[in-house]
Amino acid sequence: MKGPILVINPNSNPAVTAGLDAAMAPFRLQGGPAITCLTVAEGPFGIESQADSDAAVAPMLEMIRAHTEAAAIVIACYSDPGIDAAREVARAPVFGMQESGFLTAMSRGDRIGVIAIS
Image (tube, rainbow, N blue to C red):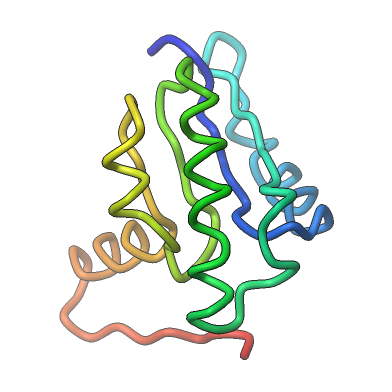
């Protein structure tokens, strides 16, 4: 795998990105791919509604277009804003936290639940 794994926080809250960066520390292995956490500075401060999600997509896509070196991209927001559009513009595989979590949970059992902060 060449290039970094980009973990994109589509909101503009740098504290969220700092938390993501800290959570990635155990996955930064010697000889493994670099993991770079990025904040979409032009996005909404938080993503709590469909309007917030919509507002995050265009600047996130610009960020993805600017990072052609990425080996993989993770949209680090539970609602996976713009995941289909991101897959259209990205040169690398795009993963969403929600989709990945659901698919993993569904592979382990037929009853799952979601606990959300809002």
